[in-house]
Image (cartoon, rainbow, N blue to C red; front, side, top):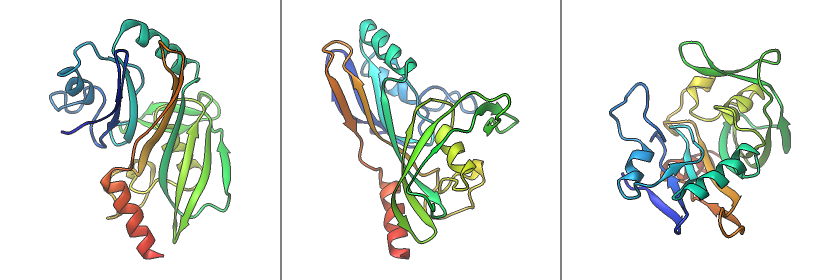
Length: 219
């Protein structure tokens, strides 16, 4: 599987993760390929800093040295790194911007869903901005202030706009895309050695671009 390198130096590696490739071993398919294993074949010193869902495509950063790993870990733990996602949702939001603050509880039930639980859940916050409206769909920019599992997907569902293709969170079946339409569009952080603020972006994968083209045609 081809993995696009967005940036590399002696300390960090930034890639565009393909959709439907887990970052770490999948408990259901432990022998299947996963991103870290594929990258470590070329960069054996590579260390993980953050994760994306298996079904999510987009930009990720990895550390290539212990110092870079320590510094980047602190940035992500303190929510100093800014992650921006693009998503296609079911339904057309009436709002232009909205910040969801539903508390979330992860790993619930046999399907290991994340659920809204304002009593026992942990604080979570996602800002949504409508980038474009289609007939019965919307293109959203999503900026999470916290990093709960499936956070954007659950917050979109809680707002009445589950992501296109996200059957796990009650989206209707579709032939427009065969996964939840979520892409990690950009990532901003401070370089762990130089101290320079960096922003990296990843272009839409083919299935995401084709989905938008189909929705444009339906207009």
